[in-house]
Each structure stands twice: as C-alpha cells, then as structure tokens.
Length: 343
Ligand SMILES: *[C@@H]1O[C@H](CO)[C@@H](O)[C@H](O)[C@H]1NC(C)=O
Image 1 (cartoon, rainbow, N blue to C red):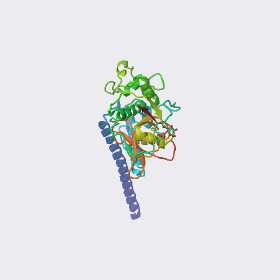
Image 2: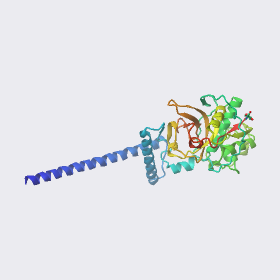
Image 3: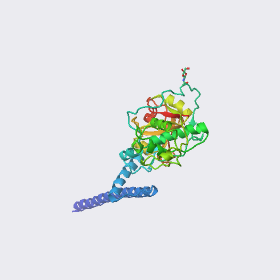
Image 4: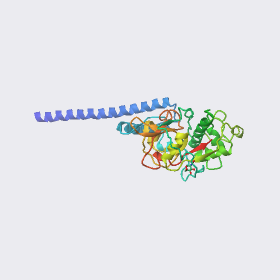
C-alpha cells in the first residue's frame, strides 16, 4: 500500500515537473517569438516599412526572423574581421535583394575603354589613400530599387577626376545616364557597364549636374534639354589591367576608380563594419567605386569602397574590402573589371 502510494506520488510529482518543464519551454519559445515580433515591429517603425496586408506581413516577418538569426549567428561566431547588422534590407530574402539592388550586367562583359594604362610606370605609391579627405568624393547616394549601380559608379569616378582636375567637387547626374545612355549595352535600371557609361559621357560631350537632372530611381524618357546642359567633360577612359591588384593599387593611388564586384552574398547584404573578407564569388553583379585603400589596426589590408545603398548600410555607406588576397581576381572579383575616366 505504502509502496503504491509512493509510486503514485512520484508519478504525480514527475508529471507535474514534466508539465512545468514543458510549459517553461513553451513559454521561453513564445517569449522568444514575442521578442522577435517586437523586434520586427520596431524595425518596421525605424525604417518606415509597412505591408499591404497580414499575409505579406507574416511572410516578411519570417524572412526577417531568418535573417536576424543568421546575422546573430555570424556576429556571435566572433572569428570574422567584420560584423553584420539588421539593416534596412532585413526583410528581403537574398534573392529579393539581388534582383533589385545591384545591376552590373552579367558576363560576358565587353571592355570598351582604352587598354593603355597611364599608371603603368607609377612607382611612388603612398601606403594609404582616402580620396574623401582630399575632397574628391561626394556624399553617399542611394540607388533605391533600380539596378543602375553602374551609373552611380560611372558618376562617382567622374566626380573624382573632375575634382582632381578643376579643384571643384560637383555632384553629377545618374539619372541622365539611366534615361539617355540607352540603345547599347546600358539599360538604365535593367543594368549596365561603367565602361559604356564613360563612353556615353564622351560621346554626349559631358554630363550634367545632380541638381539639374535629379535622381528618380526609375527608367524615364531622356530629357534632352537637361542632358545637353553639360557640367563636366572627360576625354575618355582606360581599363585597369585585368586581375591585377597591383595595377588597381596604382590606379586608385591616382584617382577614384570604378570597380565591379560580386555583391550577391548574404554577408554583403548585411555588412555593417570591419574589413570584409568574404564569403563571396566572382560573378560580378555590382558596380561600385574604389576611393582609397589602407591597412586596418590588425594588419589586414583593405580597399575603401563607396557603395550606392544609402548611408545606413555598412560604414556610413562605405565598405572596406580585403586587399592583396591570394586569388588574382581580388576579393569578390574586385580586380576583374576596373576602369577610370581620363581628364
Ligand atoms: C612605361 O615605360 C615603358 C618603358 O620605358 C614605356 O614603353 C611605356 O610606354 C611606359 N608606359 C606609360 C603608360 O607611360
């Protein structure tokens, strides 16, 4: 009898304990879920995001949750030289992201600047360079949901050479390239190539200012009146020798240089700070601008790269990408398609 009672008591106690453990687990799961929901709401408010209905919101919440978990896991791993953050792209799958934020035309990408390399024999190269501090770089811009990174890269390199030549920093028009540089390889928000952008500027006898022909982020009809109001001219452009980080170094020591990279990875999407060391491939899909180089405190050499995803992405709109890697293509293919305009 006593033993039956004992067994029964143990049974009841264990059942209670089990119940408690279960409800504790359920509670902690729901607490986690609740805090993730709150995090999403907070993020939505911060980024002014709203969704058309509850179905869309539930879908975006799941994407957000997956991204946050990925970002936390990378940051907590603590072995990388860079950090990720829950930025404005946090409710986009990597696929959504790639389809709207890049815009460098996929290979085969014909080169069309001159193959002569004016920096070929340069020997005195400073150990670091930051064209921002020399006043040759305009503030960070935002291409929005238009695949015209190529126009932003073309413009940033042109703004650079113009400042180095005239001493004046003038913000120039991406929209003119988007609207007017059509009919060839360049297709506005549908993608393009910086080499062709430079050639358009030469053929068009210059490019107008940002304020005269402001950015709209959509393909529009070429406003020929605005487009003919040229503010800055270039004489041509040159291609940096392919797959040569040492060639790229000589060029970037001389002026801001347009480069193409593979920016398709999740780590690139959520890059926040530090020297980016990958992972990434070499399927070039994004045009950006190398505006300097240097060495981080821990000794990692980097390229200083201006992006066109607004100032909240990365290091105030910039990314430092590892320099002098083993692969001849450079990190994310940065040495594969570099070019610059000539004064
Ligand atoms: C670099 O030097 C070589 C040898 O003197 C010369 O042939 C070449 O034209 C020079 N390149 C440039 C771009 O000046």
